[in-house]
Length: 115
Length: 114
Image (cartoon, rainbow over all chains, first blue to last red; front, top):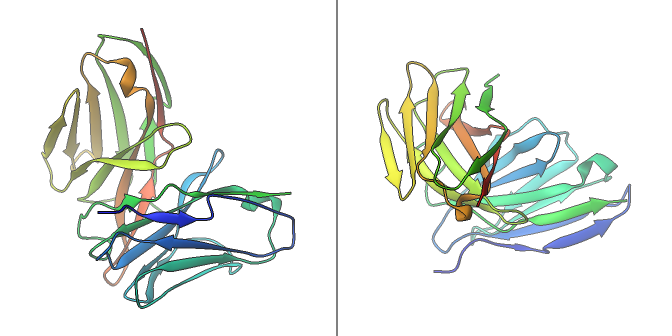
């Protein structure tokens, strides 16, 4: 079974631009969560989507948004990029929604550098 | 606000030695996860601990959960170089309704020296 895939793997943008990251979950998984990983803040939860609905959102500004499509693929968008948005963005998928003790399977991440 | 604290944050040990990584969390939760991350790679699930007293073992790693003490441990037995990685614990927190949020510790960078 193919794992979680994320595209692109690497991205360089400049301040003020916007970016869209894509995540394809494991086949059959309906929940997709996004995380930001930085050396200073560690791993922080961004949001979770389940069956095309956002279930949960972390403490990030409105510049960070996402959506999920009917095939469970998810996209994350960051508008008006700031230097501090440079990070590894990870998505994770699971069959059930969060909170039931199911393992989340992580993708390889998209490394975003904002100049 | 849930806080998840791991210690130590950095651990250098010799092959063949034993050591324990600790994960404390600040609010009630019955679900705790351990992940491993190799440099430049994504996170790999190691253990899911779902109840008080749960103990799981895989190879040289053993994880346990004490929900009353709000403490989980990851014990490494007879370490080998291949275990060198960053280890994260994460805790589910109910944030409203039936929605949960996974909160991670800062991670423990483990280096096993020959």
